Image (tube, rainbow, N blue to C red; front, side, top):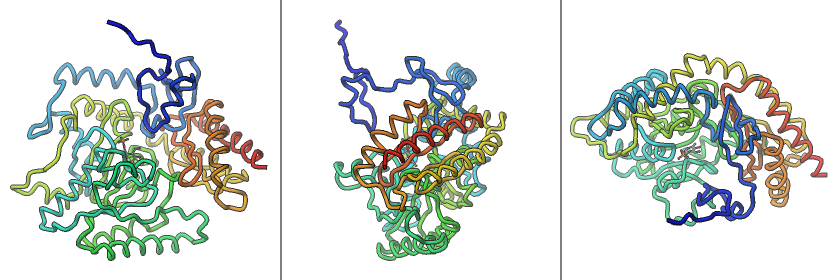
Length: 451
Ligand SMILES: Cc1ncc(COP(=O)(O)O)c(C=O)c1O
């Protein structure tokens, strides 16, 4: 047996969404090995404030490992695995009940998956089967927003809008009509004008495609990609009415916005959304195990559970007993330790610190809600950064400078350049202040580099 000697710091690991060549020879790969509260530590012991909750998932922070390990151990000692194909197990049943309890009242059925993209694809397939069972066979199209990210498996990829991620993979698995995202920055419209325009565009899209060909509209309560794009007031309520008028199902992709991210159990609670289907993942287990779920409204479930209807979908690991046990414990911890209340306490601290960033010349707009906020970067006259500044200022300076300062944040230059924070619910107010101060310092320096 020979052991290959590797010189690349990532070993043979292929990193996701990354130029892997950049890490083959240099030593700049951040390798995280430990976490505590809202902090993570790299292999050299360096400490970082986690301003991104891992990847929008570690809602309860990093200090509950022993408790979640005990829940996993108990489950493993009794039953390591059981499928949800024509059978069930107590952890999945209990978790489905628990999710129905905390979800908006009309969502009482749950389909389990192993992650966000699987949840999105499952939502699509359940929506499609709902229409087929009702004899509405022609509803094969989806409406989704521009610049939206819904995952990268082929079905979810069809709903995702980013040329670099989609183009090389050929025709999308789902025919999708794109409508505008909800960014109003630079448009010069007030909220109600923006709302009229967006809803009008969606209605025109349904009419143009043919109302009886559209199966579902999918969007996030607050869109992540583009930097916490808020809907104008009334948007989701008018969407609900529009979908009802045309028989289109409304899917809320809450893979990011659920489990306290916006300050309540669900983004739907915060924004008064009445979706027919809700996709979940990430915070369901706080990232302590991979799991996703799809919440299904009674209206849809009533059709899918009719006598004679076989649900044509499933995964070996959907609702795995160990991940279900971890999710149950995660939800128990959020409730027992009052973490939603804790989030509500730090939200005003976070919001006011973030809003103060508006004074920095390079900051065009501050937006978002709950523990999910971003700044869009722009020139002082409000115009958008050119390609050179997106690369040299945003990519080459702001991004490494924040990490160098000890903060893990999301820095992006496409479609709108910006910096985003999504801290864990357990972050201390002082650490919230420190995070935003780090962003401020780097953006002030970036502004001065602008000249
Ligand atoms: C809104 C949204 N939907 C779906 C996904 C896909 O989730 P996953 O990466 O678990 O497949 C993501 C991932 O970030 C997401 O942000």
